[in-house]
Image 1 (cartoon, rainbow, N blue to C red):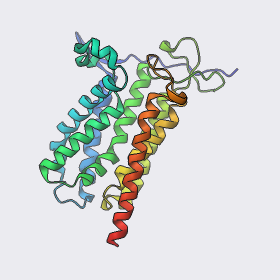
Image 2: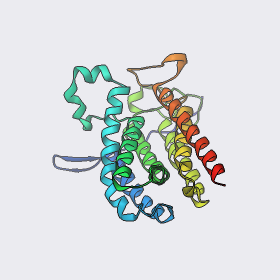
Image 3: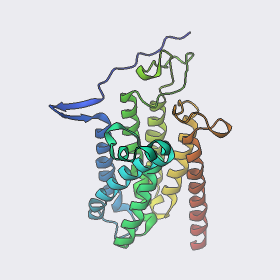
Length: 269
């Protein structure tokens, strides 16, 4: 039996001013959006699209915020607990009670990018490629905030030396799966996309978008083997989790975009 690491007891509330309580989870969203916005502005100078300027990303920030928040919330409602929210529709608006889904946020962001690109006359993939490069920043902060909240913890792992006993997970030592996700979905995926954009992939429309979809889907699918499934869902068909099922079409679309991009590049050569 290995010794487990102590779980750091960090107050989920970062700042409290009288009745106003600002949580780390909210700060993670703010940090991800703002840092992602700044990174997109920097990458816009490398885009082949002349319409995709720094000022365009200033305007897109509001669209991105609405797409992530609304999509993430509705995704959680529809993918994870539709029965509960059908019976309690007013609870959908109670964002402070938690409940956001990445795959829903992704769909919301795709919708926001499509509408914004169409309105501004910007190439769709020119926009999505840059946003894809910046998205792992927000994913990293989001997973760290999950860890601080002691939520979305991993499966029992008493033989792993870095396992932790999470307050909400009972007395069993578990995988710190939030950290696995922060590293794979955040740091590693950001590094891969950083290298690709440095090598000029932004001039091959769809490449960064396809790599992001494939990379995130693969990272999430792997980490789900270590993450405890949601108690109200448990394991699904063939022992998979909802996160894995939602990641499969994401990976398929990523591969499809990469194949399309390669063929398009070959035709132009």
